[in-house]
Length: 322
Image 1 (cartoon, rainbow, N blue to C red):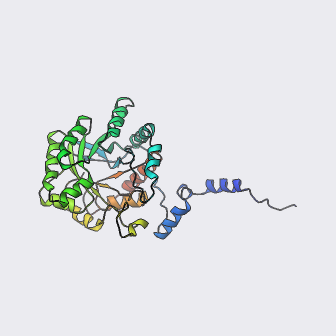
Image 2 (image 1 turned 90 degrees about the vertical axis):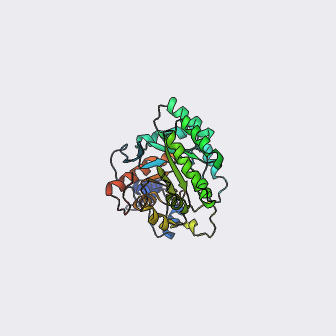
Image 3 (image 1 turned 180 degrees about the vertical axis):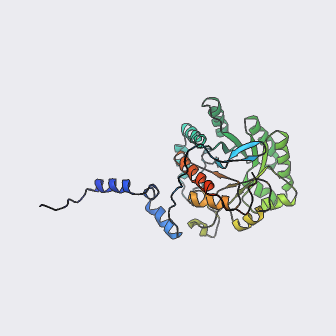
């Protein structure tokens, strides 16, 4: 019949919808849209930041370090999965050696020159192969997670295998402060310096930097969690696998007076917070660097977002300390 419009097929409709929709909106699942709606937020559009490979840097000791640092949990096959029991297994199947190398290469292409990685056999094999066989230049700051008796021995092992810095992992820092052993943290920092690398102290607890400053310990950097509580699973009473910064406001206020550089981690609450919001919250509230766990397909977008935020200028009460 003349003038009658043919109803488009489902394939044609979906094709047009994908082409017409903004990239950020097209990537959201129904579940993600529901969570954002519950949070009263909309998916942010990544800023247009221009050329890749121009990531701003800061200095810790003698090291130039990109403002964004690649995290290491994914490299070691560990994922914060909340109550999804299959996630870590899925991660290990996805993150093959070649996929790890691809992720690190993309980091370097985007100007991310440093990774914080665990000291384990997986990392030792990967870094050796990446540097020696793939021509990689990524700097390694080693996370030392062990008993207090083995902290310096494991730090030495990392240094001997190419680490440019070492720090006491957050859970270990929490434990030592809780048990009145803050002097162990000070001894660790001095050991790192004697061995020619930067030494840091990590913590999930607000009390970790408080105790270190009170004791007169001056690490080369703090590694401290920072994120808001504005995500769905943070509302549960028990901590489980979803809350890493119980006192963000107290952390922000205390760190204003701290002169050591601050690397903030868990800034996205293990994937529960959108990058634009998480990066802005951490850097705007005083962090000098952010450590972000990333899959290969997230690196370029995360770098664009961070570069855009920094280009716009961060409103901070805490001066940049690095």
